[in-house]
Image 1 (tube, rainbow, N blue to C red):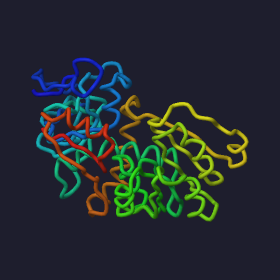
Image 2 (image 1 turned 180 degrees about the horizontal axis):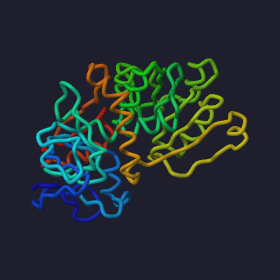
Image 3 (image 1 turned 30 degrees about the vertical axis):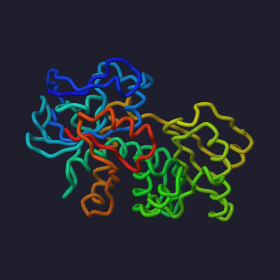
Image 4 (image 1 turned 45 degrees about the vertical axis):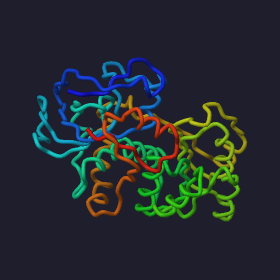
Length: 325
């Protein structure tokens, strides 16, 4: 099969497409003929040598795919060859075939094509577990989404809005702000133009927001503590602006704030399967009804994987970049 090879950690130009052996599904796994694969920030981190795959997982990058079931391993009875599916994988997505644990496989939503479905698993699994499980966001509450125009950001905006929450976002340009508003954000704040905490406090009458989803870290943390409401929850999923922060403990105590964070890749199959079940029950009906869908910025052939990575690193995209196989 064709797959993307990284010859050494470093720039995108270290990647190339090569031929290699097709994986075989083990017990409890599904072999998927990949039609499309999402490109995500963790892929960039892996390429740079900062996010190695868990022990025993292929070195091939790619955390989400969509395609057709080619073969099932022993003990799998939920899927059959020919089924149209999308899946979260711990690696191996940048390839014509990938083996995925059956609990992490979900059907392609009604009326959705493979390139759109390939943009679902990594972002929706991440948003669901961080916003709705760790962050415990409820209908009627408010959320601030940093990086609102990213794949994670557009997902969080659409899903939180669809499930009855008031959404705010931060962005780096006016164009991105307009897109976030069109997706359901009440307001999108250009953090280059104004302090987002000041604007959030103005918009909420001084009360702040109930949940903050933060992929920035660094100097955003102190502003998050200003913008968060009493009994609010701040959830960290990345540290693109810096991994070290200054915490004012009395503010934390006074507001009774919960600060947490997580990664998804190293979680067990059982944990990811539980997230998949909640998505199937709570989110898939929204897909089937056409209420929500991933925001696709560009679809590129696997042969252009270098350009795809450079596009994501440029931070000029809005939504998801997808590789077509």
